[in-house]
Length: 462
Image (tube, rainbow, N blue to C red):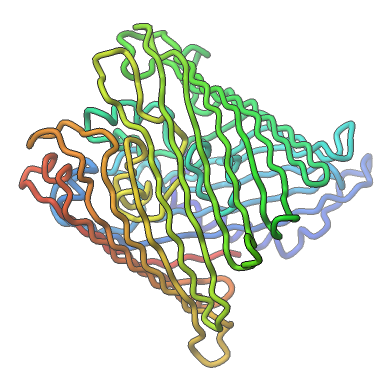
């Protein structure tokens, strides 16, 4: 693997390529012209975590501030009007354990071939598009905001890591990783209907097929512009196959979990054009491991989002999320909801980038809001954004910690500021405070029930 120091020359080469790659002639035997579009970016943060948070994440157990980052260079190569190739070179921020996550110069910050895919349009029918290769951006996301309660395998860790959330601490199990998802996705887009069939045999590769993690899914979006522009509903049927699934007692076993889900994003209800009502619901069943174990998780989320018609475009959002936990680990049944989730609304409890990524056995009530305004001469309109989020978190089922069986995850308050310095560069800052957490108190050495987080970052794109 190339080290992260090689990213700088890669960026230079990419920028040079973009200057002349609007039309690159091929060999004389092929007179067609290749069009190459080069893009990319970076995200770098100074992150301060208090000692309780570093301890839970498997770190030093002391207050710690450090720099975490990622960057990428992407090439979109149009071979013909209907055939294109995606090549993406990236350093991946979530690359293992907390000790190496996103660290400049760390062994995990190698430059990787993160995406390699071929997309073919109008295959046999004008409505059919096929992508072969990596599928890191594929997800079930009816709202279209990049937040997936169940299925975003390329933005998540292993499907199995939250299996024991009913008895342990319900964390990511130390699996601070993104999956590199590969397979085939077939899209059929006709008028208001958008159907996708995903065959993803390589979500996590473990050598022989018996050691792999795979998913197969069919999902349908249906646009409801008659309700309000941008409204749509969706359904998904997924089969997730995982080798050596927790709590399987022995190697070579394969677990198969079926998930059925439905979701909706309805805008303009009752003539209120700035109102969105949203919701999603999932149920699971299947076989777990070698001990005749059964899966029986469920999850749902309901909420609303409203944007006020004012110059600063203030907005508010409220939601409730209930994700099942495990009632009894001794009955060979996992009631914890299993997922490839990508919900990062609050930085300590939910974020897989900054926090503990509590992704199952969770009941959450969240209130969020924000606004934007213009600052600086000649600045773009609304280049300053501010937001706040308040989350009330409990475990759906009590978990066993050193101080007993507890369910209070705590109350979290987040404050964020973003300054869009230019079209290409933005600065941001975030503060997060978690307090009143009986579970945190029960799993930290000093029996602390609160912790905090501070971030200061810069991001760019070209």
